[in-house]
Image 1: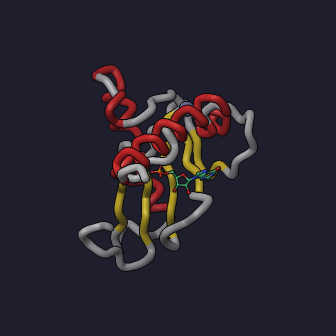
Image 2 (image 1 turned 90 degrees about the horizontal axis):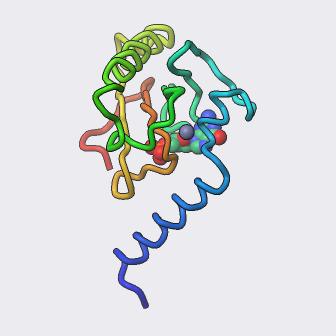
Length: 134
Ligand code: 5GP
Ligand code: ZN
């Protein structure tokens, strides 16, 4: 029986490899190669409704540029990241959750539960969100 942390590392390696093989789904959606319900897009990013929503409003703000995770963002991405946060604010207003409140989340790597290795910002709102997160 393998220890839990080794199983976790193996799963993580497998998942990253699988993603590489199939191609990045968010890149494919951003280039319209794969159909997606895009609710907003501009020259730098796009916004999708999460396929498995965890709140009445659950959006994903995704850069067109492939950046695997926040670990891989560099100085030249600063303006892009700032732009994505502006889009988060705009989406919150358009979905009527700016006043009630919402949470922005960027999961990075295994222990945070990142499953799609193309940077994205979750925007969650429309219900009371617990703290600390699980
Ligand atoms: P992560 O776990 O990497 O932080 O978030 C990935 C998110 O992408 C998850 O919330 C998952 O439900 C969502 N997701 C995965 N595949 C698809 C898809 O094909 N379409 C959409 N709209 N969301 C997806
Ligand atoms: Zn990508």
